Image 1: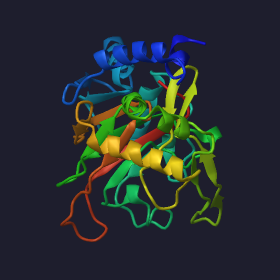
Image 2: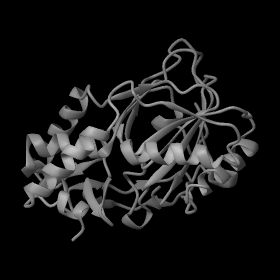
Image 3: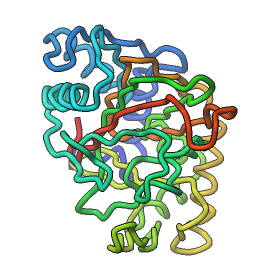
Length: 295
């Protein structure tokens, strides 16, 4: 068992205390995450790559600002794909809304296959990790989110490192961690798709350990989700309460054009945006590529 595996063993308090101390000592606090410059997304300099990886090692995410950027989906998509490949992210999700290069355009949409899904609306999105509804074989472990145009009003994101969330919950109630690590803790029921296919039921844990790394599969939504039992539901409610109460390691940002987040599928949310826009309209445009492997 590695030191990281031991840190997540609920019976090994010594390893956990040592890992926790180191994690909190090196994690950036609210407002301390720098925006890292990248001149050319399609070919980041070695120093730029090193800075990004160093930030990810501390907080599981990094914010970058591209010096040169385009609004063309094809051009930005190709740049983001090459950018991701420089960090070893080569396994892109075959998302139903993905276009060329695996890019999903996150914008207000009334398209049949997107209508009714919150990411393609102006509504707020609660705490979640991406792909929480995916099967185990299609687990999302990393993604890049890139801004082309921000909203006129709102569209702010908040991020909490999954490892910080784990620490908060384990400190408050180790038994809640155990419940949320159960392989049958959270169930997302099957869902019909616009093309007539059915997304199968997804059953799995909220927290799990993989190669010594903590992975999360989580959503704070209350509809189209069920918990193994009442004790597990209460554990999830406690986690949600802790996320809502986090201040020290809560990172808040509104992405600007050319900015993006490269991350190991950290917990995040989004505020509503453009409340005065006409129905179905908003200039906000972000591009996303999701991956099955980690940074």
